[in-house]
Image (cartoon, rainbow, N blue to C red; front, side, top):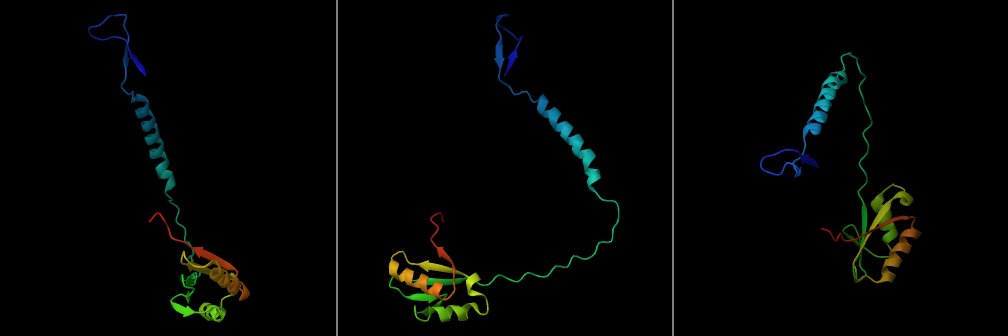
Amino acid sequence: MAAKLSGGGGDRFNVEQNSEINVTPFVDVMLVLLIIFMVAAPLASVSIEVNLPPAVAKASPNPPKPVYISIKSNGQLYIGDDRTSIDTMGEDLTKNIGRRDPSKERIFIRADEKTRYGSFMEVMNTLQDNGFYSVALVGRDENS
């Protein structure tokens, strides 16, 4: 904070405080930065002409469509939109993923909040028995 050393109408020994911002150092710094950027900008442009080879990369394959297993509160099972049962779930999943490796395939499980724990564990055990080891649980986002 700066001090006001002289001013009108007051005691000459009374020093008042000045609460205005001193912008002179700020302006000095900005002018120095402007000069630096003006000098450095021409250095960034390339004036040497080079014949570059074409950059050809293999197109990455689209990721596979995720597989969702839905468990309703009454125990009904769905793979995507198709109904299945605990007995045929392994075969239906294998048909659904095609020739992909089941041990590397991620399965998303959506279960109703009133689903019995036993029904959920039957699905988990069936997945493991059929070689599906990567499982993700889907929940509701409370923020949206």
